[in-house]
Structure formats: structure tokens, C-alpha cells
Length: 132
Image (cartoon, rainbow, N blue to C red):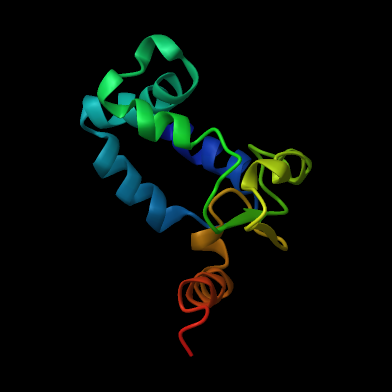
């Protein structure tokens, strides 16, 4: 199985979450080598290595550096195996004055899948703020 590493990687990212259905979908998606490269290497090269930056996206690239000038709600799983909660806490200052960091207890890296109801509630609360 050429994609067997996906399950171990997913377990590392979000230990304890049953990702079997997600893994099957991921296998289909990543069967195209372009998708595999983009998902596993391309995104990090584009974000972290200036040699991969494209001038036409300079404004968007710079916007990700913070501090943000717009309201932002950042959700982070307390059990994230890739970016531990302590790193998210350290980056809290980049959210700007209107930003807020909310930890989703017990969620790993894929918190939108693991704690679907809780994450949906937090997102809906955020996007409908002031409209009720």
C-alpha cells in the first residue's frame, strides 16, 4: 500500500480519532501526484520559502504574517500532534487586537472533523456575531 503512511501520519496529527473514512477519501485525492506534492510539500514551500513566492501573490503572502488588522478567531486543538497548544499560545500576539485564540479541548490537528459540532458552533457564533 503506497499510502499506508497516511494512517500513521494522521494518527500522529490527531491521535485517537478514527480517520478511516477520511483516509479513504484522502487516498483517492492524493492518487494524483500533483495533489500529493501540493498537500505534502508544496504548501510548506510556498509559505516558508521565499524562493517559491510569486509576485502576483505578494499582498496575500504578506497578509499572513500578522499582526492581523481584521477580527480573527483562531481555533486550535489542545491535542494537536503537529503544532502543540503551547506554540499556538506563543503565536497569539500575531492575531492583533481584534483577534482571539480559542482552544478546543481534546481535539487534534483536524479539529473540524474530530469535534464537528463544537467547531461548527464556534464558527457560526463568529460569523453571525452582531447579526442577531
